[in-house]
Length: 243
Image (tube, rainbow, N blue to C red; front, side, top):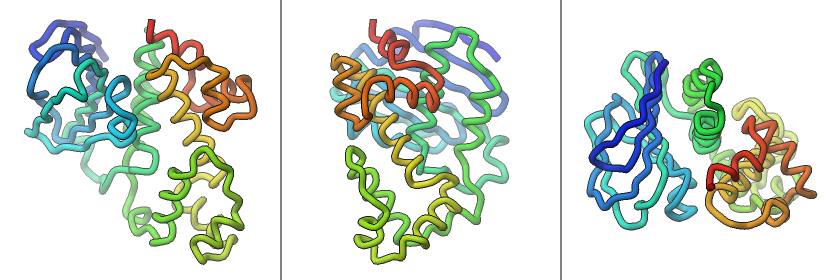
């Protein structure tokens, strides 16, 4: 495990963290460059600060040897680059897109906010980014359900309403969502809200009270508890990365 802070051709600073089977770079893009070279057999890039929300919402996945073009919309951004070696990919079939963005944000917060970061936690998160074959054959209604939940993240759709929209029995939804996704719908909704709150903490000047209200928490204390539970750090600590 090592960390090096150095100047390089495509940014002011790049912090490097080496693990068994993968490498993580936190890259600050502050100069007008055209391309970011990637070093892993599989590379996952997640914009955590800067850019638009749509750019931050869905990480980019690229194969080894590829590079990513940098445009004006991603300058002055902070990007987490996860570079996976071939040995960590063996035996895994595909990425768990359901929580990919959330998990990478959790990794970022742990690396940035904890100087003695939890090495085992990060390895567990990264190795958990993959799903086995039995989870890949998602039911069509499940894909639609996830789209609905993400589209209505600031609402509180009931199971009955969701069942009506999908034309699927409520019991079927609860049973298979938990079995395939490994959590209840309520927990998934909480994670969506936490993800959105952390994004606002890192990319806006809104007060914590305003963010809690916008993201559908009952109050700031409620947001504080859930962000701490799921991310491992308080909203105040996360906001402090902007200073």
